[in-house]
Structure formats: C-alpha cells, structure tokens
Length: 478
Image (tube, rainbow, N blue to C red; front, side, top):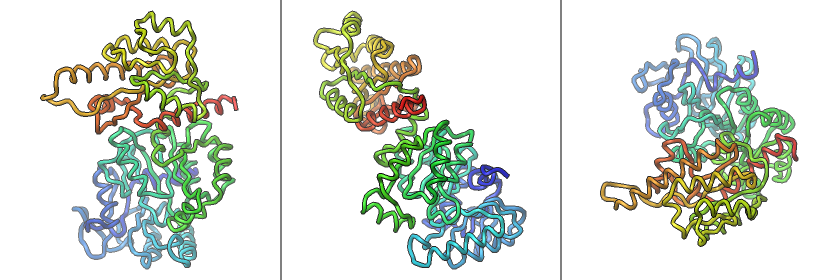
C-alpha cells in the first residue's frame, strides 16, 4: 500500500463511525454528524451511542463492536477515559484510521504524553493510524466528506488543501474567505500529532491530483529533516504557504498550551522554509490570499510594478508598500508615456508611474481605461500591474440614483477588462480597492464571476513579492 493510500481513510473514506455521536447541540459528536449530513456524504454513516437508538434519523449502535461490516474511519468524540476501550473495539473492523477529537493529553497534563504513547501502541498493533488527539477533524469537499467541526455553510471548494496544527482560527479564515470566494477543498487538523504529522499530509497532498496548492498553519515540526525533504519535493510542483506561529516568547508559550508544541527559534524556521522553497505568510490573515495567488496567477519574472490608480494618495501609499516589499515602482519610459497621452490621457493625469487618472474622469470610460492598461502591461516595462481604486461603497437598489447605477456598470467593465489582461499578457494584474465583497456592489458582483479584488495594501505587496520570489526560485534565478 502506498503512503498516499494509507491516508485515504482520513479524506476519502467509504464508511465513517462516529463514536460519541449525539444530537446534543454544541457537542463534538453533534458537530461531526452535522458536517457529514450537511455535505450529503455518500458513504456509510455509523453513529455510536450507548443510549440512543438513532442519531439524526440514522440507526445508532451501542458500541463499535456491534457496527455491521467494515469501517474505514472512526471518529472518536468521547472522554479520554473511554478512548482506549474504543480503540480495542476497532479489532476486526478493518479500521484504517482514527480521528481522535478528544483533548486533555500532552497539551494539558503532564501524563498526557504517556497516554498518547499507549494510544499509538494500541492502534499500531491493529494496523491503524491515528490523527490527533486534540483535533477538530478533516474534510474533503471533492468527495463530499466533512468530518470536521467547520460549519458547512462556510466551506468553499477550491483546489487548495490545508494542513493545520490548530483548527478554530482556520475555521474563522474559511468563514471570511467564503464571502471573498476563497477557501480550501481539503483540510486536516493534526493537533498533538501523537502519530500522524503535518509532514505526512504534506506528502499526501503533494501527490493529490485535486490539490494545486497547500496552506499550512504550524507551531512546530517534529522531524525537520523529513519535513525539509517533503517540502523541497512538493514545492517544485505546487506552492506551499505557511504561517509559523510561536515565533515570539509569548507565542511559543501559547503554542505549548495549545498543542503541546515546542515552537523553536523563528530564525531557524525562516532558514528552513527559505531553503525548501516554502513561502511564509507574514500573518494568518494573508494565508488564503497568498495561497490563491500563487496557485492561480501567472509567474512574475521581475520586480517592476506599474500602478494605475484612481486616487493620488492611494498611489503614494501603494508605492511605499510595494517598495518596502522589495519591489520597484519605476518611472515609465518617455515613449510609453507618450503612447498613453496619444490614447487620450489628459494633461492633468500623471503618466509617470503611478499612472494617476483620479482627477481626469477617465474612470467613466471603461474602454479607454482597459486600453491604457493593455499598453502598459504589454510594453515590456512592467512585470506586474496593479489597478487601485475600484468599487464604491454601498449596494445598488431600485432607489439608487441613476448615475450611481451607471458608474457601477462601468466600474465592473473596467474590473473585468483588467482581469482579462492578466491572461492575455501572462503577467500578474491585480485589481484593488478599499471596499470588499460585503461593502461594494461592484466588488460583490465580480466576485460572483470569480474575480478577486484585493482590499489591503500589504496584501497587494505580499502577493507580488511572493509571486516574484517563487518565480525566481523555480527558474533558478536565486
């Protein structure tokens, strides 16, 4: 059996037994059952509850021993005093994997490590791998499997996969990402890692045909050499974006009480990730935007960025952010500036870079705006381009004044036009504004079409910085 097939039970099981299944609101057994049902899991769902004949309308069994037939995955959501008995009950059931939701082990008590060792020994003698303890589950939306506590309504299927040593914060990111049309198609929470580790699933997703990029939240790495080998191998084919928690004294202390992790030196991890081709996110909030950009956008083969802005002050601030990220906002050549003037840019609009059309009224001429963008991005003078200032605040209703409705349609045409330039030029073209999906009609509507509008200057700068770094590394330019 291949290493990948050995972990299929956690992400593509044919049958799932939920030990501790219940309808009691707020309980882990309820969370897991609700997740399985909400995504219409096509396999067998087998609730185990000593006191209930059925759970959510599905026949329940008093113990795992009484479940008929083979079981691929057992999700354990009972107090730790009952866990070893449940593992013993797995004998003869063909169980391949256990997701151990139960907490109270090495992250919480001194004897927790010993208890984890006994769990691994019991499982291995039965040929079973263990995920956890202290986890919130896994999901694979490509297989309609949600064996996690993540609310189904906030899951947005994409070709990204996430491997995290923490769960709750990432669920928050998924809920936010859903409104921005970002998310992951697969998720694994590794918790205390008494058996399986983040490296096992990094390897798994590296071979997975449904995965085009990998997102990771890490507090520690158990086997740095093995991780480095896997990351180096996988990053050549797929982008890996990591947020490393616990790099400060306070963060390291929090990591010890969160997953029992020894966080280690931030500088050591920085060097490890750089050596392996892993992209580090500067914050949790940028994990998803960076991963989506690296998996979806064309390479950036230089550091020159052209900025087209609908407001001079934003152009100044964005130029600062880009330059501070190691990129260059270079003045456009005289020939290119003349061509922009010839296309129709008035004298009061700056052509130098940033190209500032804010006071000229050109944002009411979508065709001209897109022609200007095309002239810049195909000139050979820019490796990437950013259009900043799209999307006004507010939503359009029947009572909205007609000029605002007209502007919204023109603005969406501009956004679509610049978005199309990225594919035509095979260079990154980012569209940005201050208002997100939940605050702007234009941004909301283009998001429904799969067009993302960046809303933070640091997001723009880091996306381009990481695209350039990854392109340079993959092409052997440093």
